[in-house]
Image (cartoon, rainbow, N blue to C red; front, side, top):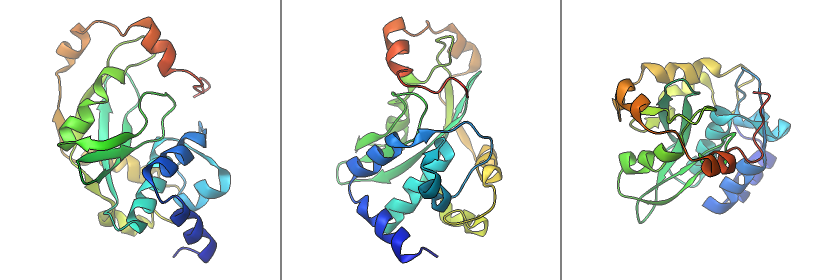
Length: 198
């Protein structure tokens, strides 16, 4: 599956800090297709699904299950995070076009608590909070028929299939729309370095 050089590189991302830093340093891309981790390593760019798959491949080499959580948003892009269980709780890895939707340290008591750490910072360009639902961890081993680690094929369909997974509501759409808009300083911080050509 992995070549020796690929495995060596993935194993070099041996701490949460190194893995999240690698994701942060990838150029955020704008294409609609989704590449496997093999091709992300070659291209050195990724969007959220591509970065999440690479993170899942790395934590699998750590001995963890390759788990992702799907986040659904209103009038905004959906998002995925790669999750793992540490000694003190749940943490995540994430590739995002914004600074505040990236990874979280493994200190959260439950997946829901981890997801809620994203709520205040998940908003659209108008400053409207948009996260309304999340899935439980999705084991990517159930998607091995996609050959998601090293495939030459477009994996966009894999990401779209997450919409069919059961999601748990955080807020109804009316309740979400009733929330105040996000503070301008937080909006500015969130979009620091963002690629607005997306």
